[in-house]
Image (cartoon, rainbow, N blue to C red; front, top):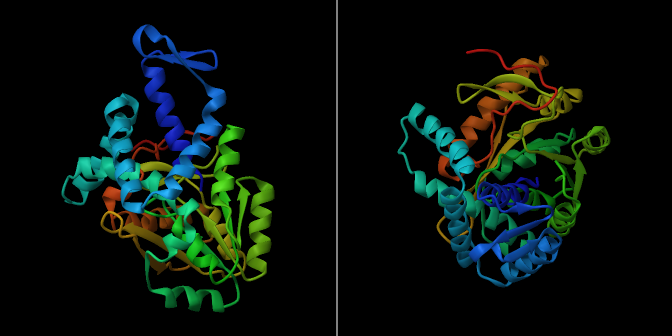
Amino acid sequence: MNRPASCLNSAISVILSEKGLSHQGELKFGPDRRIEYHWGVRKPLLKLSLTIIAALPLALVQVIGACMGLVAYVGSQQYRSLFRPQYEAVVSAHKLPFKLWRAVRASGMLFSDSLWIWRNPQKALKLVEVHNWDVVEVAINEGHGLVMLTPHLGGFEIIPRVLAQHFPATILYRPSRQDWLNEVVEEGRAYPNMHFVPTNLHGVRQMTRALNRGEAIGILPDQVPSGGEGVWVPFFGRPAYTTPLPARLANRNNTPVVMFTAKRKGIGEGWVMQATRLAPLSEDANIAAAELNVAIENAVLVAPEQFIWSYNRYKHPAGAELPPRN
């Protein structure tokens, strides 16, 4: 679940590279490009930012996040080219109000919420309004573990912390290519009863063991898997490379699958966490991935302005077969 941090880093890099500021491990900006920014200072700067954020109230952090979203959208043509078409296509298809600037602001809050939750888990837990918790209790009490699906929406980072209050959770995440960013993110995410494993064979084995122990596992189902690990199925009407992993893990031992959302309430007011149990997923990888995408679509439509539209859900990962033609 490290997409917010990596997205921010990517967005900053996009903005700066578009302006031709990159220069062999450093950036030059300002009048006549006389000010240099060296990549080596990113880690201490981010740690300092996290420390500052931890001391601020959530409302102020979300306002800062909203401003960051606006800066990323206005400052990066690549960001806009991903964000607006994806968001506009979905709200148009579902005849929903077009609230572009609200969605842009919320994209920044997606990141700032995550940082604040990492540094203030106990405060954050007090701001969560949990709906349908009985769904979770019934599922976990069946004794086959729980597959927890959490799309990148609202305050999604609070969801595993809520579950970790009741039972252990093993979370699958994709490490950043940059070691310094991984270190900062892992330090920020550390929390009792939560164990993070990478998206590789070792991580999948650890998740299987967790399910065998009757514990919960967490997967971000809206991330594009690596080539060879997914199938092409529709997502909001377009072919999207999708992981069938949740179905494979759930079908090993009849494990229940629950989709969670954490819709942001008003500024500084916290989140509404909703749990929805899915019908058993198909044994067929293509059908299961299509069923999974329908469930993600329903989750996104709970609060479409709060989804991560800046992420290219339709990209073609290296090594994957070509997508089907419409």
